[in-house]
Structures are given as structure tokens and as C-alpha cells.
Length: 107
Image (cartoon, rainbow, N blue to C red; front, side, top):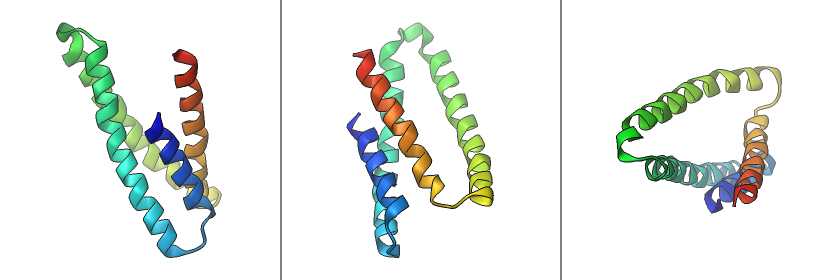
């Protein structure tokens, strides 16, 4: 949850800052957070299923992640085309806050 909160906070910074160097620094830190999310989700998937089912679940996890990555590129292009590039950083904030709320409600 801390990684998602950090990623959401960095997206706020990226959407609001005016200096190029600050955007680059925030993007760098966002990349680190994003790189941490992938193994965390895989750890949840592997620990949540018995050994017999893991290969199927990891296959589904891989397909969904790959498919959504491709879909994200197209949706990002549409977002930039019809709105501002800053929306690329504001939209993940909504997703991050929703994820944190759902995580808190599930515990």
C-alpha cells in the first residue's frame, strides 16, 4: 500500500510541477515504484494459490498485465490527443486512491 501511495503522490507532483528537472526526478521515482509493484503483485498471486494452480494463475496474470499494458498505450494516446498531457499523471491518482481504499476495506 505504501508503494501505491508513493506512486500516487509522485503523480500529483508530476502533474503540478513546472520545472523540467522536477518532472524528470518524479518520473524516475515513479519508475522505481512501478518496478516494485510488479514483483509485489506476483508475490500476492503466488502466495494466494496452491502449487497445482499457480502456473495457470501466473499465465492469466501475465496475459492481463500484457493486455492492459497495450491497452494503456492506446488510451494514453487518446488522452493526450483530446486533453492535456497532464491527465496522464492525474488519472493514476484516482486509481491509486481507489486501490488504497479497497485495500483498507479488505483488511
